[in-house]
Length: 251
Image 1 (cartoon, helix red, strand yellow):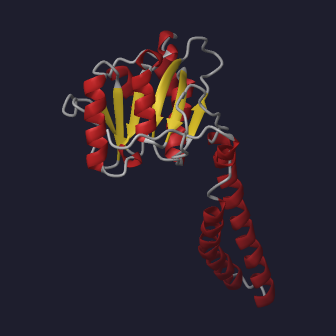
Image 2 (cartoon, rainbow, N blue to C red; image 1 turned 180 degrees about the vertical axis):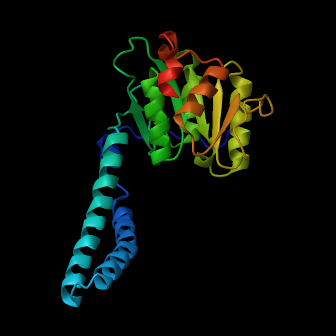
Image 3 (cartoon, rainbow, N blue to C red; image 1 turned 90 degrees about the vertical axis):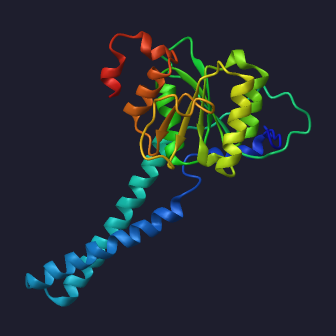
């Protein structure tokens, strides 16, 4: 393992965990870009329909503003619905903690009393939040961390408290570092299921080809059906799977 980091669990982290705290400027640019073709199409249609130039221009500007507002509203709704408020993890007992990343907890669905704890090592992106939400719906208490060293060290310190580690390889500084860390982790905890996520493979791989670093590999973007299938194949028992015909509603 390379350097060892821990997360600083204090109130300074909370603003970064609020829904909608990032990404809105990008939505504005997207809205403006989307409004351009809408405006052109609208203006041409009005002009060819005999609408006076001034009136057509005003209507076109109105259409563009509506497109921009729609993009902003949709983007904010998506962020607000998928990005739950994170909670600091309470069980890191190191002194002089150094802030090195994000640690967010997604509580298990309230319908499940016996949640399983999942370590999610992944960048702070919408895809990562989507994966965490699915795992929580399956009955997982998901701990999303952007720092691979911190998460792997925490799991190794108390392996009995964890059921699964999901590692997005893009969360590591580089692929070689990720592979080295995973080999060390698997050597120390050979019985801990590890699910890999990456955009560097051509397709999902549920074979034992990468057994030294993980039990299965999912290609990004990861969809609900493939995630459930991978969890089932590697044999991780989530509370949801004990219900009748669980996969039908998750497909």
